[in-house]
Length: 405
Ligand SMILES: [Zn+2]
Image 1: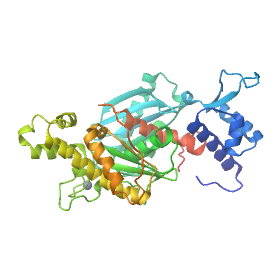
Image 2: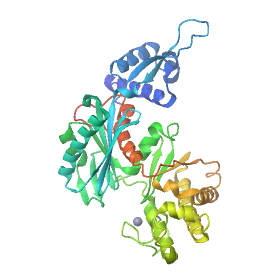
Image 3: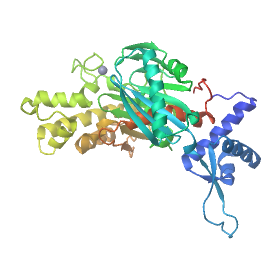
Image 4: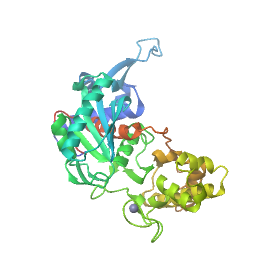
């Protein structure tokens, strides 16, 4: 966030943001602790926290324990996560997956709808209707919804809310956020789906206490998102993190992007199944799902070898990223987290062995295993696009205006 020197409203927003983020990372603390944590004066903390309580962003809580000398019970301040809501939507080629969450991105309602028409205006209208259904399901007051986050695969200009290129939907330069904002009247944020997962990890997930981390989404495809210095790194066109399309094998297997030999064409789930079926045509009719392949690998050397090699290949490519950005943490998420220990043990070994010098030593690699057929992590990631505004700007976006980082 840029702060205008001498602008009292910018300073106030910055101080609110600082307080909210300390509380998000640490949980409830007292006003005295906030003074120590922020370096702000007692008077400033009293004034700003009073404002945040009035805005229903903070709440006072008693710990239930008396002070050391048996005096008054200390009053703690915590974020009032339940007072505001966000909508998160994951757009797929054939369906919209939606959740309604509170400010902690805890899911209160979820819905899936077919997406049969890709005309952007019609999609915006469908999103408007879907939002109303989510409000009804969750039985919440729509006035307390702070915004909508939309996640989809592709290159996204998050600053303007434009879908630069989304091949699955056939979209080029679609101003999705303005269209949805016009239909719903709510602040709307659009981002790449892997960036959305990283936003969720940064706010409330494994990256909560971390400034430099890499989020990898593995499943039907392979993508990454980089959080550097606490901020998502987007690059020139919003395409940073597309390492799934790094060349792994010259003139190799055909990739979903139309080129040959990309890493994704060897380690994504459809690629693993296709490789196994090509190598073992006798088993191709019985091994048609990833759980079947993983189960077979316990007793079938061919399946086990395929998973090990794929894990090693992905781990080797992750080590290139480790050498490039020197992260504190790697988080692996997505449907592909069910690929099992053969895959992930090889991946970890390759990262630790291939990274330069000490860069891979003790580098935590968290496998954030998703339950089978649970779509809500993607949509929760989308909701976090709306929620993060409250923490990044210390305020709730109002009306149709968007605030951007
Ligand atoms: Zn590719």
